[in-house]
Amino acid sequence: MICCTKCFNDIQIKSVIKSIGNREEHCPLCRRTDVYIYDTVTNKDLENLFEDLLEIYSQGTEENGHITTTLTQELTDTWEIFDLEKEQVYKLLKEICPSLYAEKPSLFSNTIIVSEYSDVEYMEKNSIMRCNDWDEFVKEITEEIRYHTDLLNKESFSQILRLLEFPLPNDRKVYYRARIVNNLYYRPEDIGAPPKEKASDGRANSKGIPCLYLASDEETASKEIRAGLHDKLSIGEFTPNRQLKIIDLMDIDKISPFGISNPQFLYVNKRHLKRIGKELSKTLRSNSSSLEYLPTQYISDFIKSLGYDGIKYKSTLNPKGYNLAIFDVESFDVCDVKNYTIDSINTNLKIERD
Ligand SMILES: [Zn+2]
Image 1 (cartoon, protein in one colour):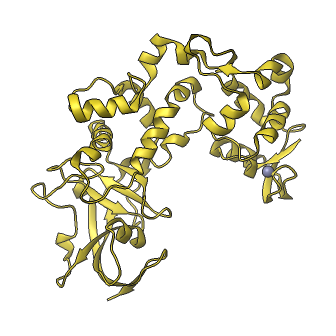
Image 2 (tube, rainbow, N blue to C red):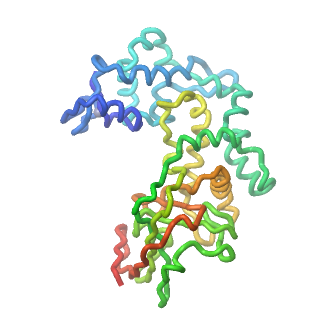
Image 3 (cartoon, helix red, strand yellow):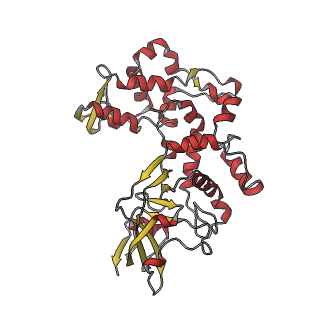
C-alpha cells in the first residue's frame, strides 16, 4: 500500500518518509499532490516506530476503571498522527505493521486499554496533575492554596517541558511590541516592559513582576493590544542580546509519541496537555479578573523557576502569529520605534506608516 507525507500530521513520521526520498506527483491514498511517498511493501522504516507505540496498548474492556478505545480512534483522535479517514487508517496500519497484525489481529479491531491509566501508583508518580483533573487544580490555586499546592506534579511536568525546549538564537531576528498612543509617541527607552511598580497581571506574569511580551510580527503586536481603526500606534522593534532558552507551548498538545522512550507517560498526560494548550490560547480581555490569569501564571512561573528564559505561545487574536513572554526583560534591546496609524479594519489589518 502506498501512502505519503501528507497522509500524516505527525512531524516525526513526515520526516522519516521524506528522508527516504521518493518524491511523487500524486498520493493514491489521500490524493494530495507533490508528495514524498512510502510503500509499505518495500519500505520498513515506520514498522518499528509504530510497533513501539502500539506496545502501550493491550486488548481490554471497560472493567476496573479502564478507558476503552480502539486503535484507529487512538491514532487519529488522541495522537492526531494521521490526516486520513479512520477506515483508511485501519487499512494502512495493517500494512505498515504486518507482523504485529499477524500476531495480534484483535489489537487492531477490538477495544483496547492502556493499563497504566488505571494503575493508581503509576498515575500518582507520572500524571502531571496529581488529582488527574485540571479543573480541580485550578479550583485549588484560585480558592484554597495558591502558592504551595501539591497538585501539580513538578517532576513529571519538568519532563514534559524538556520535550518543548528550544533555543532562541542571538541573531538579528526582530520581535515587536505595540502600544496605542494619543499624541506623543513612545521613545525607544519607554517602549519596553513596564517597571515593576506598573507591571499589571498578564498571561505569564503576576502583578508587580515585569515580563516583556513580544509578538512575531507587527500585525500580531497590534492585534494583541486590540488596536482599532484610526488608532495611532508606536511599535517597538526588539532583538535578543543573548541566546535564550525558551519553552514552546504552541504545540504542547502535539508532542510526537515517536522518538520518546516512554509513550505511555505522554499518553497519561495527553488530556492535561490538551487542556493546558486550550487555556493558554484562551482570549482574555484587558479587564479580566486577575484570578482568570492564575492558571497560566502558575505554569509560567514554574517554567521560570526552572531557569528558562521565556515561553512561546499562540496568538489568539492573530492565528498566523505567535507571542513570546520573556522573563528577563533586559535580554532584548530596542533597535527602533516606528509610528503608525491604522487606516483600515478588516482581517488583514493594514498599518500605514505615520
Ligand atoms: Zn497521502
